[in-house]
Length: 200
Ligand code: MN3
Image (tube, rainbow, N blue to C red; front, side):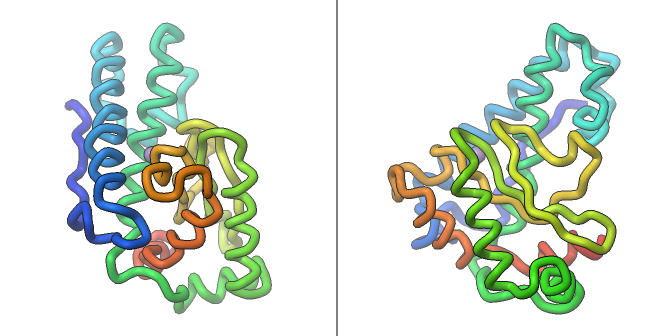
């Protein structure tokens, strides 16, 4: 069965002013839509893989024929990463995590402010296009980053929060000012959803 583009769980303008409506529209419809379309096109050349889940494809890229492996890596990664990205943002976002997630952040980083500084640092230092991640590792949390559309899922890890630092995620509003985008992005982080993913 072909992969499909999930609808945004809110309007394009819902994350204003942190993320502008035009960026959200292009990002979801054109960029994420493109990953889904290109993933399906690549898998037409390997029908035996079409029933695999996204996680399964990403965790076993060595089982993908070499002729389409890069296309599957980039586009399955892009589909996975963006599907989570829309969910971990909300017009009612921002603030701080609570419950078990808050406890885990404290245990892993000392306090929430230190976590935010380290996460923003990982986002800022990712050279070129990519993502910064908060990854669940047992009861611990770690911060990492990946280039392009690579995802911690490829290493069988469990990302619970990620920020897209491709220029397409912020250039219309923030131009080259990635740190300003990341600073504003905290205002739309959907902590209850991140907490749900942590406890899943
Ligand atoms: Mn993107």
